[in-house]
Length: 238
Ligand SMILES: O=C(O)[C@H](CS(=O)(=O)O)OP(=O)(O)O
Ligand SMILES: [Mg+2]
Image (cartoon, rainbow, N blue to C red; front, side, top):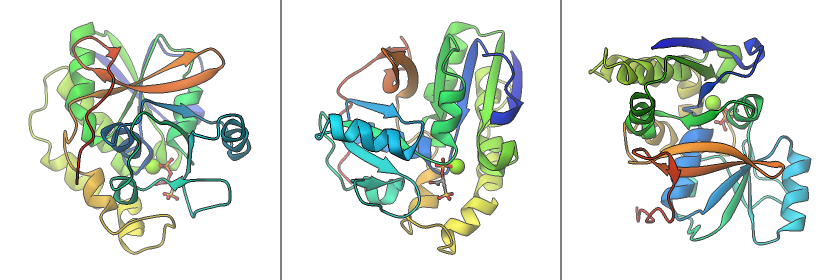
C-alpha cells in the first residue's frame, strides 16, 4: 500500500482514498458521539454554518472546539461527551483541524476519519478494500502534529500488516505538544481525562466514514467489514 501523509494545505487533487486523522480530539469525539447513540454527525465548515444548521434543526446538537459558546450545546471533549446521551440525535461538529480536514477531501471516493480509538476498524476497511494508495490527512499543526502523524503511520502499518506493536506510536502521541497542552489545561473546552481517552487504542469496533449527503458532509459509524453505515451503535455507559 502506497501511503502518503499530507497536511491539509498540501492536498492538491482530491485523493481516491483518504484517512483524515485527528487524534486530539475531533475524531475521538466523533467516535464517542456514536458510542453515546448519535445517528450521524454533520461536519460544518464554519461556526456560522453550524449555528445556521442548528437554527434549521433545533434538535440537532451543535458541538465546537475551544470554550463553550452561545448557541452551542457541547464542546469537543471526549471526557465531557461520554456522559451525554445522544441517542438518535444528529450532531453538528466544527473544530479547528479535524472537520476542516474531512471537508477538504469530500470529493474522495472513500473518506475515513480516524484516531487511535478506531484504528483497527479503520485499518480493517483499508485491508478489505485492498487499497493501493491511501492519503492520510495529518490535520494538526500544519501536518506536523505528532499525535496525528503517529496515528496515521500506525494505521498505515496495520493496513499493510507491517506493524503489530502500537506502543511506540502511542508514546509519541502521549508526549506530543497537544497532549502536553491539554494536560496542562492550556486548551479550553477540555476534561482532565481527554488525553487518556484519545489514546485508548481500539476502544470502539466501528470505523468512521464520511460522505456527502445532499449538500452536507456526513459522518457515520460503519461496520468495518462492510463499510456500510450501521445504526444504532449501542451507547457505552461509562
Ligand atoms: O479540539 C481540539 O482538540 C482541537 C483544538 S484545540 O487543540 O483544543 O485548540 O481541534 P481539533 O480539530 O479536534 O484538532
Ligand atoms: Mg487535533
